[in-house]
Length: 458
Image (cartoon, rainbow, N blue to C red):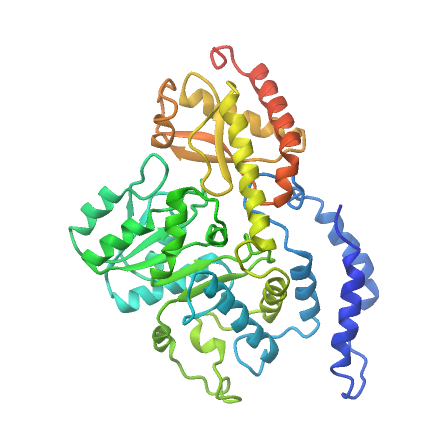
């Protein structure tokens, strides 16, 4: 099941790469322990068996998507040179590739002018965005929804900026009445609009946040780490479509190519609408930036050393799969969304399950039907375990009662949260595997119910 045919392509590409250095005197690299390479790699392969099959369509749990073969191969090819995209001396070709790839991501959101770069992931990308926000709005409060990623509160603490959570509505989106009330108190510097929450895939109402910005003058940071690539789709619900259509009016954007961008970990990206924020990064190095008058990416990044291989992998992927509506990348995302909608439709029809709301992107949350929150929560964990026995791997999430109340009024609220099942259908192959997933899910539910106490199944 693991692709090995493409290794021939890698060998050919390595030969092509080697041709570019033929003018150098030949040498024999010193490889300590080289005689044991095969032994150690076989041992590593055996150790890696202790993983869930993240690459397989029956893994439908957390946000784990295999990189595209071209990304994996381009990364491996570049590792023969191992460039560092901090300064041009360390990564000339890959720095240029990074600038091109990042410009293509910015263009996907409608930005021709921007400042941005790759980084280790969404956490570091959000750190940079909020660091810039704190520099421009010193001491001002950061607001994000209760369903926003927990990294925002932690980052705010690191930056010593006040942070507050804003309540969400029944769809898990930032509540605009609550936001307006909080803004009325003043002292807010930045509002984080999450375009695809990592728990349930909800998209905050960015147009309404922009309207409030016109009244109160705060910065808007769009955390599109998970959902950003869905800007390529034309089939989202009306509210999500409007949000993605307005993302160009944000002050900063974060997106994670190592999620829906088909990249290896870690590859995040931070973008700023105003290139002038680059002055905030200004620093001097006694030895790094003197080889060229061109921009060194380390001059606009809080990180120093960064892998040029990540830039080469992203560049190669976007050369193969351009970030355009109607293209192959968009079609892949559409298949993931269709898989989520198909699973949701089956859950709604089956009396053994409850669900909250239709997926806005490709994340589905659901739970076994029971008399109370506590009984349903216990069954969720049992279904999770039973499904794993059938090689179907889901995830478990703890979500507030308010997200379930409106859609399941008969469920007794004997606790403040419901432990539910969560499925991230982010592989395009998931659409072809919905029947197999559904069959295993039903079997797991039957096994869980048969093992449950009598009161649970009443």
